[in-house]
Image 1 (spheres, helix red, strand yellow):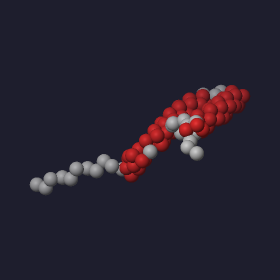
Image 2: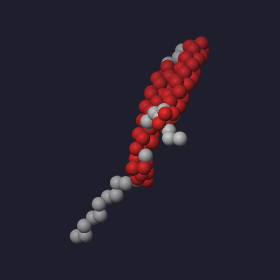
Image 3: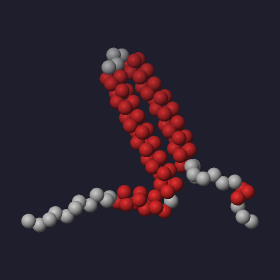
Image 4: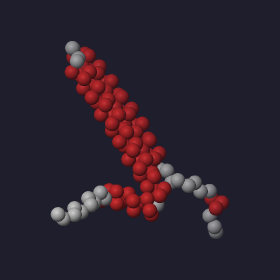
Length: 105
């Protein structure tokens, strides 16, 4: 019986992440933070969307439906605005802070 080859667990994504970490560990950390924050936000928004769907399906009048929709849009707008601010803060991280005094002339 022939021996089976070990399964290659490397994917292009893991290979790229490893290369980025080797070249610039700070950039790799920021990238991981951005991806983790994106996943967190998407999960949270999907949960809220599901709850809104339940509320929409349980509405008994057009007025109630309009109220649920208005609340949903206001909350979504607020959530996306806050998320944009968080993502911009994460993207602007440079790691080490430098002062003007440490630059040789």
